[in-house]
Length: 278
Length: 278
Image 1 (tube, chains in turn yellow, brown):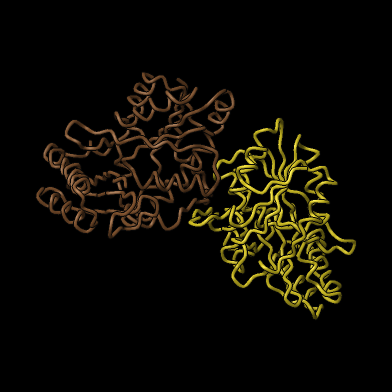
Image 2: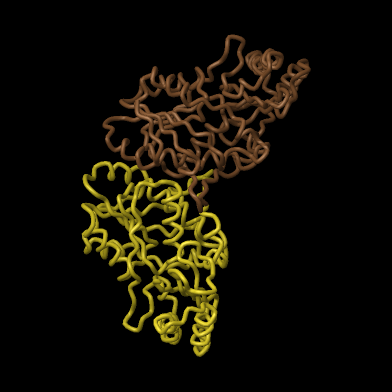
């Protein structure tokens, strides 16, 4: 497995690859969810490139950029075991040299949900993905459904800017009790970790109501909030039932709906979602 | 010569091309300046693709989008004569389908000069060029020095977003009296056309002062304005002596300087520039 630190070296290595290339962009501190992305890429392509880059431009000034967990040596060992061909791990100065000032903005859908709470977040995501896609030139890039809005934004950017790759969305990988895997779960203390299962319970409530014939989005949001409020450590940021493409809140679920939520446990903020298919 | 109207067909045609591909993006209504770009591309590449697209997103609401001159049949004949391989001529709905909402913003340098007078202009330019580069996937794209700030913006976008092509800047092509070739020159009535030579005279004044040892930018701007004000049909929009990369106005010319100007003749606004090399 090659470990590549500069854009020039990554482009040179890419030019040597023949056949289809799959790409798994990550912020490191890998877990089983990332490895499932890697396995999907390995299955569908001749080569697989992963990247590890805690992207400063997608963190707000009061967010956890410096605290974000990092362990590249462990990440390398995990990726080596999955037989990844190359890991691209640039420094912040390599990706954003002095004078850098070009941004990819994905418009209205970045103003809702996570974007409303985290202004500038998706500008950072869209910009770094555009750069990574241009550097790695993959045929396919793999993202987890857990970051649902990120997936929506990236699919829109790729389509609107006519980029030459396919975005493959892989189902969320969960712990035994339903908690979605996330590098940020490491922030939770044991009590918060137990309490965090409430996200999955709230999503399951929505799923059951929908399966039982409920299509009133307000009632579904209401039941989800009632479920979460039973957990004293949980503080709701938002509970949303929205159109999967425009991310506009729905009144009636008459098309595919993204049910998503953000909940805080102490200083840790977790997100999760499911899609209700029409 | 192939005439291609859809993004899908252009991408398919591109995949059939072997060797190096040069690209000349235009808004049509071609003149000798465009043909010089084409000849440069033909010389430096195995294939040459031109595009004709009057890009609505780079025109302001009060600008000349609908009036902009168009004559695709004449353009095709000219490009055919230059042995261009393919012309990409998409409709506005092909490039900007309903729901389109992703933009490439090149930051501070788009707020100066033309960007200050034409808000949103360079967002449209950067976005359409990103799209065209992704569709045509050229090894090199050719732009005229006449649109100096456009060149600066595109070079910055390509570098900041790690795009895989080279931007080749070709010197401005001029009429016998020095007027820079432009599709918009067709708007000028015979009196305005004569008066328009004042742009070249003002630029030549700057060049002579600089060659004679003058490095005070204010004095150069002042002499240029005095020159232009002698022409009663000319109304100055701006006269600038700026850093070629940041486009910040200079007090002293102690590095390469872009001397540029925008002048109105009736309802027609013309721009031109020269670079003073240190």
